[in-house]
Amino acid sequence: MAMPQRDTWIEQIHRLEGLLAVAEQQEDWAELERLKERLRALIEQMA
Image (cartoon, rainbow, N blue to C red; front, side, top):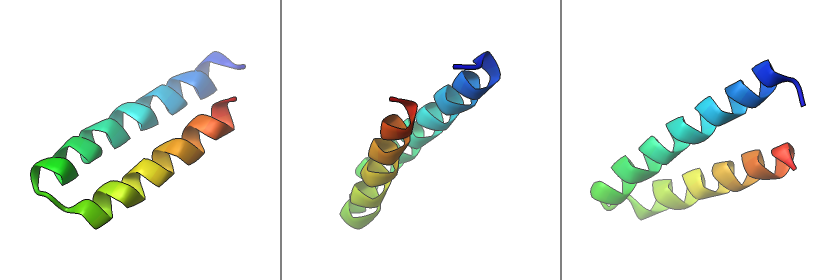
């Protein structure tokens, strides 16, 4: 895997983790599930 691509994926994961934390703090469960699905899809792409 190319390093720039890996770095981009890592940045996306960190951004999604931050958004997950905000959604959880605001108790926005629908947004939390949507973000979890985006994170799962991103991780699957990395594999």
